[in-house]
Length: 132
Ligand SMILES: [Cu+2]
Image 1 (cartoon, rainbow, N blue to C red):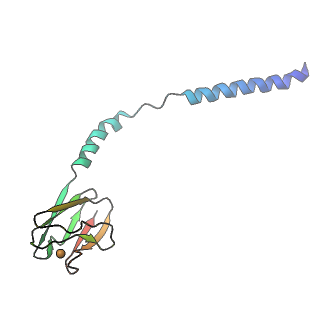
Image 2: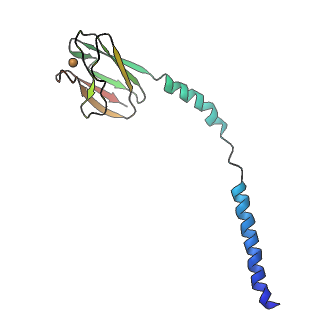
Image 3: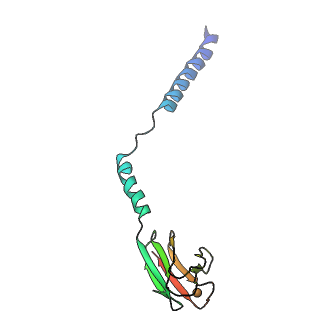
């Protein structure tokens, strides 16, 4: 009888462990926080319509030359010169490529910090974006 005790105890322990484990694994997923669900559509909408800033390319100048924006802002460059200009980040993180007269190129800034940029055709044509 004594010889059977240990294997029996082990078997019981195994059954308990297994049932605990399976009940843990079968646990339904935690219900989604309703706050998250109500926030989500608004957040998605905000991403679709981010705040916007427009920079003109006029007379070989970015106007305004320096802008301060919040992270997530959409920045658009519109070329008002007859000659093509680009907005090319000095560190190459972005490049609108050459923009023709009357055309616009946009991007959304996703990182904070200072971005300096220039026109690829006219290196003296420079601008700065300060992202907060
Ligand atoms: Cu240019």
